[in-house]
Length: 100
Image (cartoon, rainbow, N blue to C red; front, side):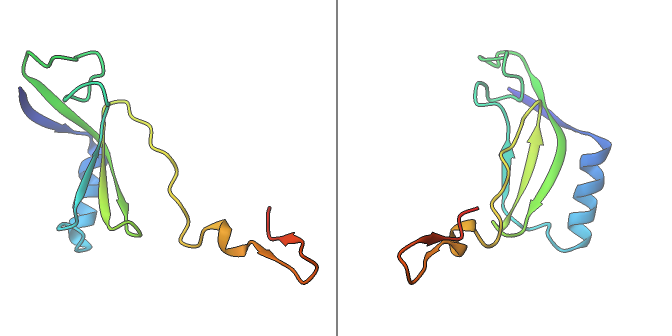
């Protein structure tokens, strides 16, 4: 049973900034461990009350949402606006060009 949320100073600072910049109504994605409803990968059953620990908040304007990072979580890098595949082509000699 979840009993509350704890925010780091950094998370609170980012949240305030996002709200001031009118991003406060964007959808939210919670990045947390896959092993538990909590942010503690060892607490598989969540039988005791627990708090979610928000470490940071990241705005993903291209994707159109906010990512809330909880616990000890790593995220994968995002994709650029223009993927590298846009520069790949075949020249007049049938050779592939534009691959790194």
